[in-house]
Length: 159
Image 1 (cartoon, one colour):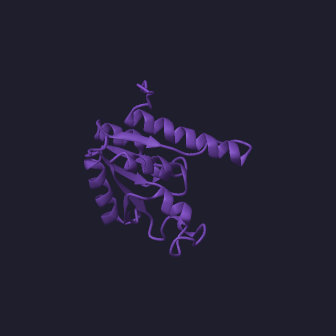
Image 2 (cartoon, rainbow, N blue to C red):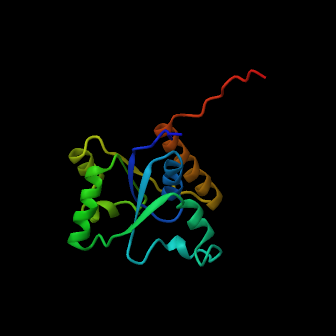
Image 3 (tube, rainbow, N blue to C red):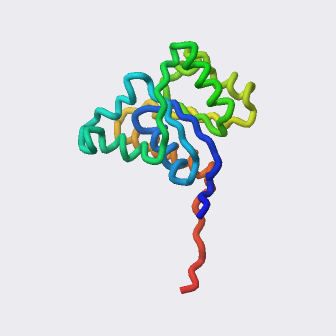
């Protein structure tokens, strides 16, 4: 069975929960997702050690993805990252505001250079409670995924 996003290449510079959850859904729908990690790795790997020494949360949110370590402070790794973005259909990132531009990849420039590249920057909104922040991040991820895959439809049952 061919999945709806088969053939789609997603490059993601992600950590923690919001972007990994969104890209996990894209991978579940058949996209090839390449997760870029910094040399020290995603800090979410260390939340706990329940799955062969890695965080259960990390393993769950990163299933179905490929992982590449890049140090975007090194020119050769920046070149490799730029080459990956040139081939990608979707770019997802959840770094702090301004960080991707500081690394030399401002979203506005990526859109000009690669007009067909869908760029998605996700981060939790500033709010007073952790629960509200978490639910907002999750709903934003699902909103992005439903745009990519299509909103769920109810089919009439013949039963």
